[in-house]
Image 1: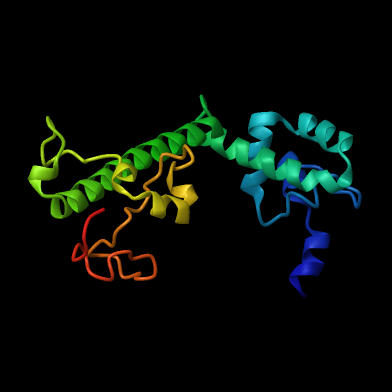
Image 2: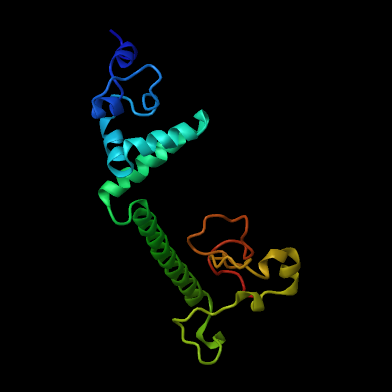
Length: 190
């Protein structure tokens, strides 16, 4: 006997858990198959079967699957973390994004510092600047011809992301944007 025929004969996970007969028009059957009993157990534990029934009856049929998936996700999150539920997972991921953004900013600052340490002689540093501090902005050292050729280089658009320097870096294999004619500092600084 195929599994599709047996699913018609066996009750859905909801009816099986509630110990009732699964009728042909059961509202739970399409969303809580007998193969996934824990899905309904979690939803029932957090929201209650009668509340889920009311919710599904009020929704149009094309929105029910999304609603059940949302309920199942929140119920599983609440079982794992009864206080915060899925908000705890979202907060954790937001903190992780912030931490990784700080790491990325620090890595970009290190890249800029290392690039400038090899490209600018100490005598060219502004007064009060050590060789370990990045020298910014680069745009003041570029000619007006370069600004005319690249009008978007005047500001970074407020994004706060690393903007590549106007010269080739030693680890950059892309020579298309190299204004020094190749290499990592063989050309003159502008």
